[in-house]
Image (cartoon, rainbow, N blue to C red; front, side, top):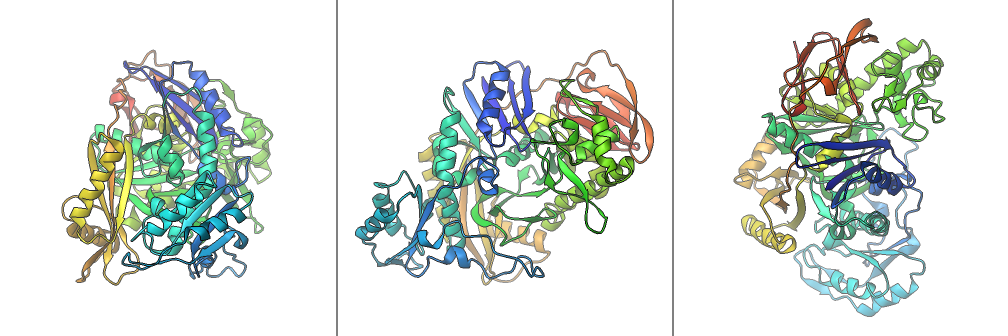
Length: 640
């Protein structure tokens, strides 16, 4: 059996589907300090014979956020003479222009562990000064208590000869050596060096984690940030590619299932216990980006460039805001009500969880408003309504505070969706909102109303959907080449190299990072036909115009894809529909019809106000909206 396990910031989810479409699942609180404990428990609770585990993890991200019970390994950096301070100098832009007290993030490698060597490769790949292996050997002897070494030489993307020599010497002394052209063969020395350092730091952390969880597991695959599965060996070499492992799975699932439903333009909306994430799918293609910052700050879902550590690697283009079920509600010094960015997480969690939390959260607010039941997980988890009410009373009238917090959170999540639509030249009103995560269906209608969206899809088991999505993800690895002279020829070379690595390949996906000659930054463009035409269409969509200048391809990028067998979800048969009625505060107190989702057959319809409860989530349908159960159990919520 193939078991999918998604370890999130608050919950750990596991799911398995047999050949007949029968589903077994588990949802439990995560163990942030030891995530492997929660993962193993989830697999044990399913009680099935495990042939393969597909895993989405936050271990790489958490390592830089200080949320794991470990320290980043001591890492050294070896670079070209004159460039050892590049990771400290970085870019000279000021991320927060009016913050008088802003400080750049502390360099990941202290100056005493940064070393220069006498070597030089020119921009065209010509080796001007060959590296002397003895110089590397002398540095290696001096590196006591260092666990990992990063090597980033000038212009190694054009010719990696000197870096290869350095790796050969260093590998005799260290278990973990990362050279820049193997992880980031691109221009821009700062970003490439930063990516290499981050990869080197993650190598021991991720390797130990994978070794600890892979015991007794015949086969293990990890979700990558770019939207595909990669094997353990690939992750150990380039762990930087799983930094956004968890959030990527749900977007791929939204793409796969929306295509089965005949929907081409979709916004994936994933709201869990800690954050809410949004991604766009245009014509059944997922939007990707090639830049990210780990450990940085976000402002209303927008990454504050320069606040973290740059990573140059393909990522699914996501906007993320601190709005999850565990997001804390508070008042600032001026008395204004605020929501986030701090989260109560899984430990101690919301007040209602009765685990010692003393700060009111969005989950507490929804509980007090009657939007969620006091018994979750099919009655296995009881929530403390009075405790939640008492916590909210410290901020004012609990109903008014809860209602205002809901509106503030909805506005914040709508901002995130605008980042992946409006700021990409897309109109959100032309999209269907695909809502999942434990809290996503609770908030979907509120968020849709903020954006003018008129159609929402809620998948089966929405609180487990990222885990379910893992079962629909294909194997996928990436290769790239900088400044290709002949783009089409370079694509073919990359495809051949990927075929040698993977063996069987079902198809390839081509991208270019391109710009008009003279521009400083490039766009990542999916190549469907001619890359020039595709680039100009993308440029027009994003910026509203094109330029009469030559087009320069900075990187040719190819993904090799090997298809996996997609899960089969049966149509719901339903059962004895036992409607209940509960007072719920939406815009005022109303009587809402309450249904159990597992009792609803295909074709069932109901008009709001309606609440549909199930094991992993709750769907809220407001007045003026209509719900219908469709094929495979997907619920469609439409504006009337």
